[in-house]
Structure formats: C-alpha cells, structure tokens
Length: 212
Image (tube, rainbow, N blue to C red; front, top):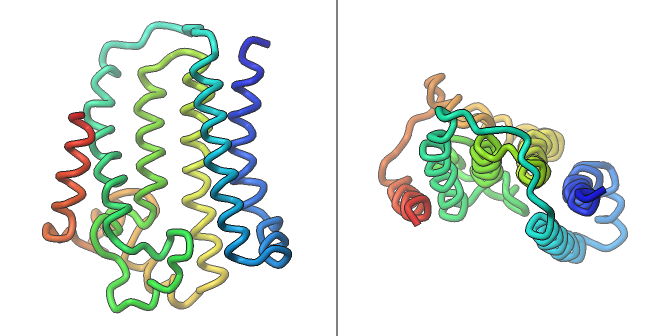
C-alpha cells in the first residue's frame, strides 16, 4: 500500500490521455464545450495530473528491485542527448501532428527539421527519455513514474496518426509517405533526408540541455 498513491497518480495520468484524448469521449467533450474550452481544460488537467504524479513520486519510499547491470549505465549518455535534440526540435518547427497543427499538412513541404526524423518529436523524446531512465532505475517508484510517462507518450504517437488518417486522409497520407512514426525509419528507408540548416538549432539546444 505504500505505493498506492503513486500508482493511482500514474494511472490517472495514463487514463487522462487514453480514455479522454484517445477515445470517443474527446468528440463528445468537443461538441459539448467547443474546441477552445476543451483544449484549455485538457491542458490544465494534464498539468495538474503531471504535478500530482511528480509530487507522489518525490514522496514515495525508495524500494530497489535489484542492481543495475554495469553496461546499462552508459545508455542514458547516448539516448538522453537524442531525446533532448528531439525535444528542442519539436518547438522549432511547425508540426502537423501537434495540437491544432492540422493546417500545416497543406504546406508544400510539411516535413522539415526533426520531423524528418520522426513526425512525433516531442512524444518520442519522452519515450526515449523515460526508457533511458527505466534501464538504470530498478526501483518501484521509477517504474511507475517513467513507465506511465513513456507508455502514455508511445500510445499517443500512434493514436495521433490514427486520428489524422481519419480527419485528414489525403493530406496526412502525403505527409506520412515522407516521414515515420518510429525515429529514423523514414531516413533509413530513403524516404527523406536530413537537412543540416534545419536541425542545427535543435542540435545545439538539445546537446546543451543534455550537458546541463
């Protein structure tokens, strides 16, 4: 029972996104309250849920499940800088998959910057950051915190694709053909290429965050 509150907070964070934003309930709320009110309300609820989750994590006892294998200790050194570059890149380029970004699907070249790496840079930054911490944090509290954040972000990436295919089928198909959900997949398949002038700023900011 000592981790009950943290478990409830973790579940609440996941369900807020899976059972509200990722279900038919979203359409009901949009019809009832309108787009602006729904987005503002959901944003406030997300912030409140995240604050609750972090506070419960900080207040939970530390229960180690086992030692961390030595080779895994180097994983965050490699993965976290990549996550931070994606995080910085998510805020330096207009994204058709961001909240309210559907209008960018009509752009001549909708996939620029880190969108050439993945069409969900913010969500995948959370997935990679969470996974890197899970691999070196073998305690119950970390499993609940980073697990809920990572699973929610991973589910969200695929859920947004599903929504865009339904709401903007032709425009999203064009965007989807030159991007990938999973990072680097489109680049490795030759469906896109990195353009240095588009990613130098995310690289500098992301690496600075990682070093910090």
